Amino acid sequence: MADAGAQSNRSRLKSIVGGSAGNLVEWYDWYAYSALTIYFAPVFFPKEDATAQLLSAAAIFAVGFLMRPIGAWLMGIYSDRHGRKSGLALSVALMAGGSLLIAVAPTYSKAGALAPLVLVIARMLQGLSVGGEYGASATYLSEMALRNRRAFWASFQYFTLIGGQLLALAVVVLLQSTMPEARLQEWGWRVAFGIGALLAVGVYILRTRLAETQSFTNQASDRQRSTAIGLWKQHPREFLIVAAISGGGSAAFYAYTTYMQKFLTNTSGFSRTSATEIMTFALVVFMVIQPLWGMVADRVGRKPILYVFGFGGILVSVPVFTAISHATNPTLALTLVLVPLVLLGAYTSISGLIKAELFPAHIRTLGVALPYAVGNCLFGGTAEYVALWFKQAGAESGFYWYLTAVIGMAAIAFVMLPETKRTSLIRED
Image (tube, rainbow, N blue to C red; front, side, top):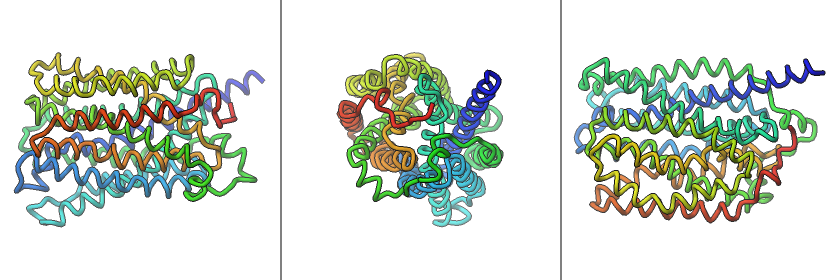
């Protein structure tokens, strides 16, 4: 029996590691677009000024978020009906297609208006992919983890998500150090998307070999249908809470990670290389604290650490952004960026888990994915666009207050959230 138990634990660990590795590649491909926007935006929008180019690229970035609710709906149902690992495999296949399309996309000088249209199609594919990936990944990791270590293992969703972003930034740093900026802007950025496509193909093969979760297999014989209408009728309160939490958490995440790199160059005045280095160090710290916050959540519960982000984020957003906008020293800028990121880690470490614990197994993936995608689409995907809109309108500080209000929405939802450590609907251990 001991050998069987050890084998079971090894199998569980292998599944968690395998699922996390796939998540890393998914989010590498997703963030490569944001990390390289400052280089390829002039190639696709050559007649506009620098801020307008970023604004146009951000609009296409937001298109991917508009597809996420559709991906969450379709792939959430698919994962609930056909299995978590099947959903994970399909999501990474779509990501591979989107990344490959960006890698070979024609420039404006060669294809005119067709060039940004290709970007839109690629982002639509990636939006479908990530829309399904979040729910399937959060559900898979949460169901695979042991009850008393569930928050710790679930935290690896964002550990690997941030790892994917770091990998994208590392590729950018490598490209910056190995080729002139003119060549990087002309075609070098394509290398990152080619790498992402190849990695995604490898992870697709890996994900087809993962073990399925007990939560899915245990209710295979009497599984109820997973539908969006059923989700809303049976769990309207949970739907709205998850959407509000996801909106505030996603807006903060994208403001302090993907947009922050542009903010450091476009507002604070740091060079592209310096901004990349600052964000690389900041994201390493942000990644490392995910499992630490997860361990705290296993001990004290979910809600206390969620309050750390919700009410802490309300307090620091305006002063931190204001201070960073005037920062000229890289060390000071890094320190300031870390303040909200450490607070944000209290949410991101267990963001998928608290949603998975709210829903029964037959509709869990859809329950995690769809309201998350709605909140993320409305507030996360538009955060960068809103920030640049305020800047172009000459009222950049308006975004700081906007972000504070959206985080406040999440804080209210945290108060309404049950303590899922005690009420979790994930029955298997």
